[in-house]
Length: 320
Image (cartoon, rainbow, N blue to C red; front, side, top):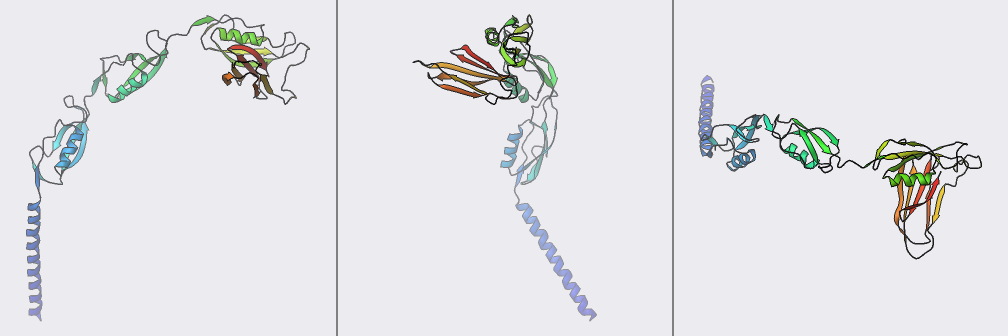
């Protein structure tokens, strides 16, 4: 019995020995049969070119990190492992360190170029757009860069911010605000447009001691400096000549503005604007045939005014 057990373990030991030797020689043959390649010199090469080169050789690219380097450009290899000339098997990793470029950059010239183009240039140079200010300029077009800080040629840290001064274009023509108090609304609107200003909010006041539909208050006030396209707010007296409040919306649901283009042969250029809630909104601005009827529902429960222009001339004003 004991002899049979010893014989069994002896045979088992021989079996494992033969299996181990076979596995060793098999693994050795497999390893020796794997192809080997020589690691190329990658230092100074672009990251994309390195990726393509190692892929063609059957090697894997692993980015180990990045570091600033004044001599090697941004996104180029500064260090590799294994070194160039080393024999390694295909499928192995090659580790590389990429350059962040220099810590400081030279500020590019952004003067007299559009703001959006300047921001693209900054981004391409690893810089950011900082504070953006605006001012009028006779020499630099609107939305173009007048100046920037730091200035062209100055040194700045990578990812630093450049502050831009952007042109608003030429300064608008300035005027002394005319006195509109005491004239009727239609004349006031014509005066505002004559000076290149915009009619802003038109609200109503009720004064028995003044004629109906005349201007009681204005902003900006008479004599103030104003410029083209500036908004002018007006207050209009709504007390009529009979001493009653001229309030069409009070107890009256009919807030429909009506107008019919006079008969004739030629079309007329009609522009209809509604002033309500502090804004002037164009409703019509087109050529219209003679006899055409125009309707406009005017908003209730707010001060509103309707201006109708025929061939650029104000011909009808209604306030509500």
